[in-house]
Image (tube, rainbow, N blue to C red):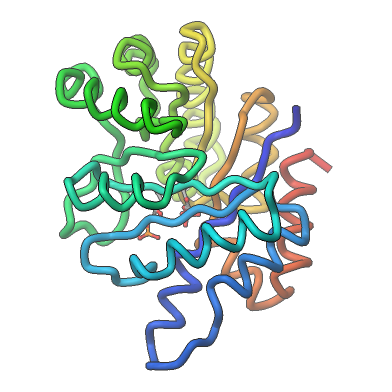
Length: 247
Ligand SMILES: CC(=O)[C@@H](O)[C@H](O)COP(=O)(O)O
Ligand SMILES: NCC(=O)COP(=O)(O)O
């Protein structure tokens, strides 16, 4: 199974929110991405709705249900009461739990699953009872894998921000790839599937996939949106899909 691409539309929503106008259209660009072969769409609705708005979620859910029934919706966020109610209304195929504080500029770390396991366990159970796959956002740390399995998660998502930040330091990038790879190996040994995301690009995907060929899904937004401004969304998705295949 090739690594699947989930297009994160946060940055498109951020651009839309600059004016009180309906363009660029989050659902319109999401449709183009899915038509071009993306496996799904990802959003991270933050409490301040700085980009994706809660009102975007039913429209994206309807887009997938009505026009792309085989595609997946992945909603990321901190499991606050409001977030849990939002995902239970939306019923995405996957929920990715992220330990973000509302004040954070972006996601910049994963869970300490061991320390948070008693908090996470009932949350994971509640989401799975609702028919949603659960992924936990974690740093490059093999020790997180047994605890992710213990709390009942289906997957982990490797936080690849530090890797993305090493775009001009190949030695550091190689070290981080190995740390991410060891974490993926530990997760696979626990029967977990492995996703990855944050600051992934067409250029840095192939080396990561060479180390982690069984990566189930990458969710990509920032760099993909930047490329879409240059190449258009359809061509950009095709470029990222080729990078996912190592071609
Ligand atoms: C969890 C993660 O790394 C990203 O998916 C997240 O969506 C980034 O959030 P912003 O788009 O708000 O920076
Ligand atoms: N989970 C990562 C994601 O959805 C998008 O992250 P980025 O590509 O915007 O950094």
